[in-house]
Amino acid sequence: MKARWRIAIDGEEAPFEAFADQTILKAALQAGAGLLSSCRNGTCRACRCHLLEGEIRYVIEWPGLSAEEKAEGWILPCVAQACSDLRLKRPDFGA
Image (cartoon, rainbow, N blue to C red; front, side, top):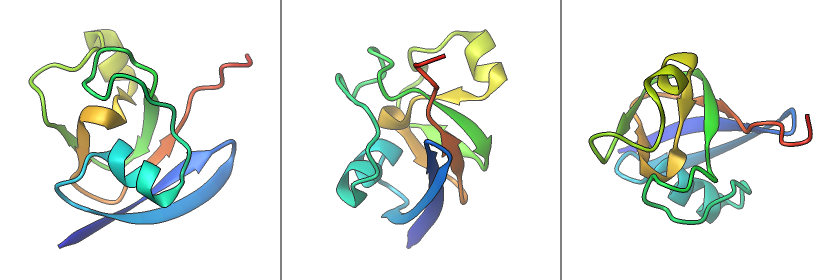
């Protein structure tokens, strides 16, 4: 079964499909979606994105986000899998 989600990068929609058991980061990298990454285990936070729509689940118990960040909708795609269609936005590091 394949899950499909969209990743908004720099204001552009870039839809791609991934298997439901893949992490969002792995699927994005395979699709050439251009998410940043480093550790790929939920600690470095390089891949941090804002979840605008949809639901995810984590493959680890508590990723490297504070409770406040999680409440604000931040996720770590390197340790998250989609549970529905998603729309994500990378942070604006230039602001």
